[in-house]
Image: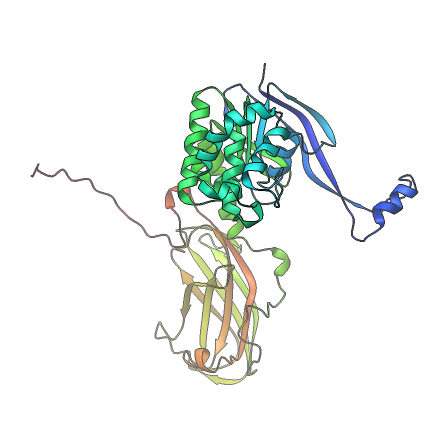
Amino acid sequence: MKAISVRNLTKDYRIYSQRGQKFKELITLNRRQFHEAKRALHDISFDVDPGECIGVIGDNGSGKSTLLKILAGTTAPTAGDIEIGGKVSYLLDPATGFNPEFSGRENVHIKCALLGLAPPQTNELFDVVHDFSGLGERIDHPMKTYSAGMVVRLGFAVAIHVPFDVLLIDEVLSVGDYLFQRKCVAAIRAFKDHGKTIMVSSHSLSDVATFCDRLILLNQGKMAMIGGTDAVVQAYVRDCDRRFTSIEEARVPIHDQALACCVDTLGKAAILAVHFIDAEGKETTHFTSGTGLTVRVRFLAEEEIVNPCIRIQFLRNDGMLVLGSNTYRHGIDLGRVKGHFEVLCHFPSINILEGDYYVNVGIWPDEYQSFVAKTPYDVHEYRYIVNIESERPHGGGLVLSPSQWTLNRLEDFK
């Protein structure tokens, strides 16, 4: 028999944008709908064996808390079947079951009653709950005087000391001071060693990876992955890195005024086209770290201009300059130009790592005026995007730098 069995679990929330809309639905016997359906969980299925510790990770809003609330019975699913073997204890919202006007001592009795304990059982457990919480004399103070961390301390102390077979914990590892977090992790490990079934949601990947047997990765309410901790954590981190460095195509070719520094131009010259060419001579916007990349800029000088500075910049999605080059830095004198021209900037090895990058292209009167006056002949900012792919062995960060490792044996010394 499984400790937890979930089949085709789906949860929809009704979102009402205005007051009274829910009442309107009631008086029309739901023949007219005034709500928007928000699907928090979509067709989730999994099993948890007795004594297993399983973690749930994912972005905020991915459905982690909703899943645990349904398993705890504090909210009902829209569809699907759930079976849980044994008694359930949970700590979801730390304030659930607590009255801020009552003291911590009184709230312990209230919370234990909600979890099914009789008053004599609560009296037997109170001292150990009090000791684990570390609240000391504050246990007799009104809970409205507690900090958020103190509320979590008391809630977690109650949840782990009532008799249970299945323990559900939501984000408690991210609240409270460092020492209490370590205390929580130690308690979870102890319960795991005693054969208790534990399901925990957390943003602390290092913690869940150390004591969980498996992980569930949720993405926008869907089961993105379930498996061993290392594999799931790596998949989630890679996905986060990809999204962090990505640039939405919808932003192109819109001129991003929030990022752009050049609004006015001097005229006289205009950029006509910008192309990106790979090592095989093909036009593309997709490249691999360490391979060649050529930027081809075609422009028209309507009036004669003298030795313009052609500048190319690669920028991360937050506007940080990652790589740049210009004709002045290479000592190239373009002389007097008028008419149609093509300039090519060749990078034998594009040494930036995986991600999307803006490419800014500008024609300036000279190098330094571009930083002082910030008035170019013409400039295309945040209009072009190139995507760089990289193999995992290349490492992390922004720059690919070839490296070699050597192991030397040393003579033993005292």
